Length: 177
Image: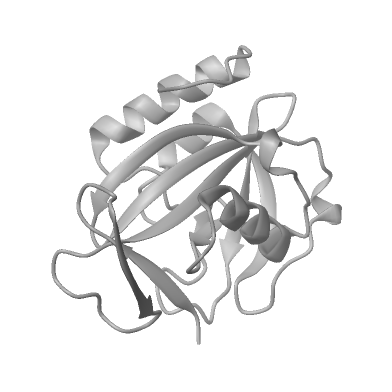
């Protein structure tokens, strides 16, 4: 059974865990992580959610998932990247782009990572992912959050800030507040 650490609306740890799959108590949140993987051409790597997924089966998304109890967000994104794509990265290779709090029952940390990897080297996690593709950043931004493609950021103001920070990331910036 997977457990999540619980947080309040301000990301303060509550000192309790909660089993995945059980509705969270009102006013509590767990952490999740997402990584926008970019190649040297500025394209975004998307993976397709397996058809057996309960939520949004067959939709394209950026790699990510829940932070397990006791994990840091960096440990979680390293694990999720390895599990869902077979790619390995050290924690120091990730850049924290944006935090989006109080999104449904979750606080999100959105990271960036640069990787030049051929699609045929991506390894899929059964019942999680089943395909991958590189898409131009502009094309991805145009469809992210619409039917068939999930967006790492949910609220519009966070999407626009994410896209602005991705542009700065591509220009070499690695620290965001």
